[in-house]
Length: 289
Ligand code: C5P
Image (cartoon, rainbow, N blue to C red):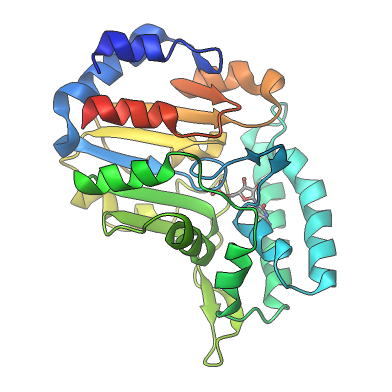
């Protein structure tokens, strides 16, 4: 697809672009440098997965466990926590600084709660298969095509790594060019969950832990083009450790659209509203690969 065709394709009612000239320029660069220079950094929940499917809100990684066979007390407590903290997460009137302590509270409480549930490693497969978590339409094509061209894909998530791997395994393919950084569960010898392996990754500290202490970005520093995909403003920092020349930021704005659109348009290059597919990133890849 030529750049003109691509820009035409972006001219859709659910696609919002603050600075079309900038977007055109970056896409031209991504096309020019091609797959050998490309890397992908993507959030998981509500970025690679759907927010809504057939009119119902889909599960995040944490929701998968609530929908599963965990005790009633857990489900109730987890719902109460979400009712308290999700509106804070998505409130465009609060600053990130105001949100951070609340998000730490949410993750700390919900992970503490999970630790009391004696989740067995074996139950995860069933929790995922019976859950409402769904990869976006076109996600398998996205993964397969990036594997075909050996483009590294970093999935950086404040969800739960064990669930992410299982969702991808069941609904698509986990290729060896894909790397997940997330909260991974710790299990004892009996296969019961006892906690998490590292410090909490919540939506607003994706810039400071795990991946940035590793040599992930250094090892692929010759890949100077990047497509970054996220759904929260915290996701914009997922690649702070990478020095790239051309970065296209695609944001999925799933809820509180009217209040948040202007802010998202300032922060993301392309904002996709109420789009449960990966059609836009996939069309871009068709031009670049
Ligand atoms: O993959 P991502 O970084 O987007 O995952 C974090 C998401 O998980 C958040 O957007 C948050 O709404 C959700 N979450 C949840 N239950 C928790 C903690 C986070 O559904 N206990």
